[in-house]
Image 1 (tube, rainbow, N blue to C red):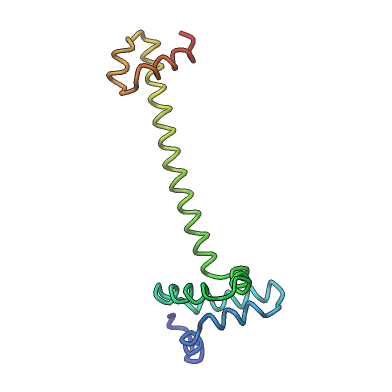
Image 2: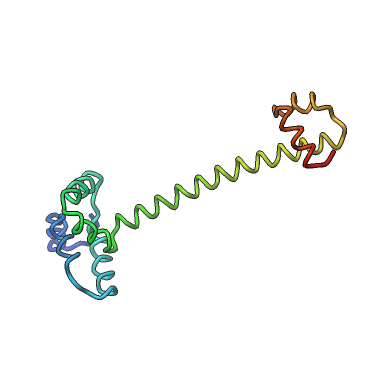
Amino acid sequence: MSEKVSPYYAKVVENWGIEHEIMLSRMEMDPARMDLLYGFFNTYLYLNAKEEEQMAEENAKLPKEEARKLFKNPNVYYEKGKKEGIEEGIEKGIEQGLEQGIEHGIKKVITNMLQKGFSDEIIADLSGVDREEIERIKKEMEL
């Protein structure tokens, strides 16, 4: 917990739980006030991994409609999940880009070798690409 938090807020943090989340989800406030309130709590109510797990377990016990209301509210878990999803998407995108880049590079090398008159056997041996793929590339090149 942050050193800046007063003893009063430290007590609030210590007693925070699913009941308070439910209470906030039931309050009918305009979005700006709700964001302000959740911003405060998400700044000063940092839950450790064990507390997050407990919160998730308690949330799982709620009736579905009540649980849905909780997830509609802006909260740190939503933002955390969103951030993790974006990071995972970036990683997968990089992996796919590398794979496509490597495939494109190999195809470019094979094309150059074909243009220079290398035999299919030598190209297959040096590139590790099977002869059917080399034939397909030849057809694309119209050789």
